[in-house]
Length: 278
Image 1 (cartoon, one colour):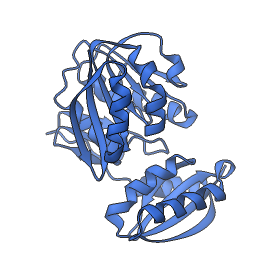
Image 2 (cartoon, helix red, strand yellow):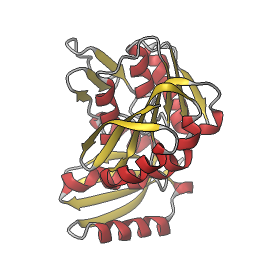
Image 3 (cartoon, rainbow, N blue to C red):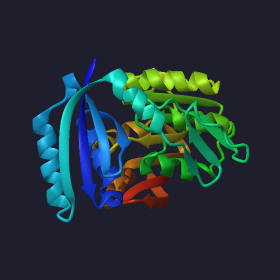
């Protein structure tokens, strides 16, 4: 299978890299590798759309006029770049309590939760602020004996962490086939009982004490009503995958279904919310 590799050079790099990567995920890009000047972005050849990419870049520059960006494009075989990406894949430590790492990293004995995640193309390795923030919010969340849903689960890292923290039943759903298969591999590697399913919110068939939805603003707005129907009274809803400026529109929708805001955090203009269902 061939992939399209886009090399992005960005200035200032730290401010815009992860924001742009998230936008690229929305048009089919599946993985990213950091470089000294920016990052490499990969998309399956059959899913690559140059017009969508051009429109995304144009919109990004309009919204961020101080950014200096250039790109280079080439075709590349999956095996060639995937091996290189694995070599440079960094582990992530969150608040000295959770360590997300690949199988070629040594676990940290002083950390309470070591999670092994295969560095493939699924979203959710804790490098991105959205996943990082949900892990932060889960640090002080009592999950013992709870039923939990991880919607838009990507690698399954949040579902695995929930089982480590004592959740009784954990389910992970993603509508991307690669993510679904990757989550199955990661659940097996960590030796935890998580039900992994391929699909979307239409698969919801039970109620949960805790519901995580780390997706994007549009999907969250579309599915909040559906989520509310499967969250128990007094249950917790964690939302992430959107910018700080999106909080108000999401809260307007959440209030319609009996949710109240309990906590919010942000990282690099990305936000995460903890809501309680009345």
